[in-house]
Each structure stands twice: as C-alpha cells, then as structure tokens.
Image 1 (cartoon, rainbow, N blue to C red):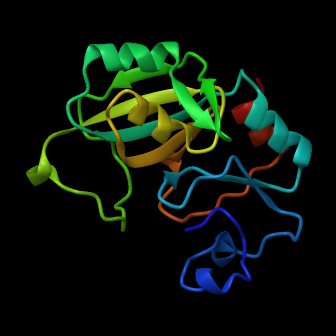
Image 2 (spheres, rainbow, N blue to C red; image 1 turned 60 degrees about the vertical axis):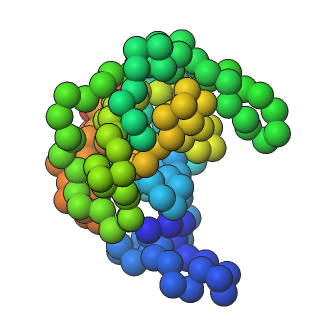
Length: 185
C-alpha cells in the first residue's frame, strides 16, 4: 500500500492507497511516510503541528525491524550505532547515533505479499533499529552502507505506540488522552 490517499497518476492505477482503509477527512496526512516496499505502523492526522512534532522530535523514537542479507557482524552493528554516511539529495549525510540490536528470533509480523528471497539463497539476520530521525529511505541506505542490504523493513513503533495491538490494514482512531499517553515527549 502506498503512503498517500489517492493518485491521479495513470502509472499507479494498480497500486493500493490509504484511502481504501476508510473515510478520512480531506485534510488528512500520513505522519512519517513509508516507502512502497516497507510496511508497518503509519499514523494519520489532520494536525500539521502534531505531525511535525512526531517527525522531528529527537525525543520520539521510531523502531524498525529489519531483515538484512547475510549474517551481520559486530563491526557493522557498531558502525550503524555510531552513524554512517549515506546520500541525501546528492550530498553525503552522517546519520545520528541510534540503537541497534540483533534479534535472536524471527519477529512477529503480519504475513507480507512482497517477494523476499528465502534461506535457500543464503542466511539473513534480523535487527531492531531505533531512530530519532527519518531521512528518505534512511534505514535501507544505512544497512547497505555497512554491506548488509535490507530485504524486509517494518516500522513497529512510534513513541509508545506499537503494531502489536493492530492487525494488518487496521485503522484505530485515537482520542486526545490516548495521543498524549503515546506521544508526549
């Protein structure tokens, strides 16, 4: 599903859009978009200030489960933790330090329709990467920069809110108290 509500682009007619999930207010916007090959938690709001707070606050974590190609080594994990150089708008950018952990077991994620190679083509590793920023395709660029390209990427947490409470493609409306509980930095 694409992180936008509709498209008039002829080339996107076969794609699915957020508008299919419900009747949203015309001024609705996605908070922190996911690229087309990523999955997971996506917040939708009509409050631009709140959206900006979530996207830019260094106090609100965004956690991703990432399947990478190969068995990741300690030096690559340490490089990710300390920040790596990636390309943003044609310029080199050093990512901020972040939390990176190797997951000992497969994470519980909804089934995906994406084609992801299986273990017959070599081993993979699963990581938890927690960021305070969100540049274009940042996690994918980071893992690639240390030699372990991303195969599957799922955002599992924003602030205190996780996908554990949700099923695939579900929409849950939060009231003011719930928003304060989950996202107050």
